[in-house]
Length: 485
Image (tube, helix red, strand yellow):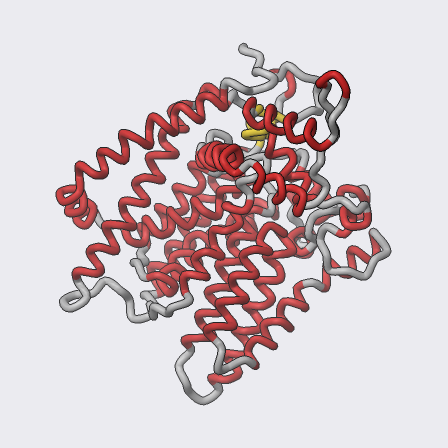
């Protein structure tokens, strides 16, 4: 474990940075998804049952903390700004660098931790200022994997067995809370389960403790489902299940015709009715493909088309993908690139995204720098194994650790087929930033560029125009343009 003093200072300074961002943006009203989460936390009885389709663990924790601070004389909003700053400071400034060091190497320091927090609040200020579930779910996944690694690597000693049991219970609880908070992490949970089975093949009893921890995290959801829906179930989307509708299938259907989706506030600047927050960026090719699919499934006379979608289940969608692999591959590339184009990191946009080309280019530049830093840092580490290795003693490469890495980013990749919101790519981008900062070294990058500069120049020549062309084409397909002041 690295020196605790600079890490403690990193948490304190990160907390102050996050609190400053909260006070500077001064968000006093939560709207749309943020409002629903907030009401579920503070006044769950005020939320209509049809909106209770989200996991209850995250708002339940928010509600308990807010209730505690309320009795200390703080309003729920003031308390949220304070405790969210502390939680995200610990998660971003401490947990992620330390967990990545244990998983894949890299270095941990005060400046690296502060740089990571600065990148997040600059690119994605909305995830640390609104009560949204994206960042909490990601941090819970990192926490669960870190505890699994601690359980695996804990040295034998008196009482070591019960320490490992505690880690296993805590890891299972974190994974259960992750899934409940964002159900898209079900793919990540599957990969983690495979990795755990492979790594604990001689200590299978620890798997039982993880399952117990997972089950304990479901209790708030079971109680809420019983009270709101009259169903004893741990399923966060139980209301959709009762309507025989697949939420995931609906999102896949939307992804056929929409390249990108944003939520706007300030309807006085929108050419639409107040209270309609959606800013939809259409995909003309995807819309035509959707029409062709519907026409083939429900042929009408005289070449007419139908608005009825043939996609009611995920299996329906997969069959269509197999029939049109090239079209869907192009669709996914557009979605993926638009997801990396974080022009709307505030989550609820107040300014026109098509006017933010500079922000767009800064996003792709940061991604390329992160990839370069990872490549250069690992090349330096591989060359230094026999002299002065950069790999920390805590880093124990295991054949199945790549499954944990995939688990940390697969939620972003799984969201690509749907209507893309840039917050869906937070898990992938956060991993790249953590890895890039952890492996970063000016000397290593300089050495890498001296050796392979022309290759990286060629990559940049291809990436920048492609990224610019696709993202600007998307911006041109905004269905309701902003009203210029």
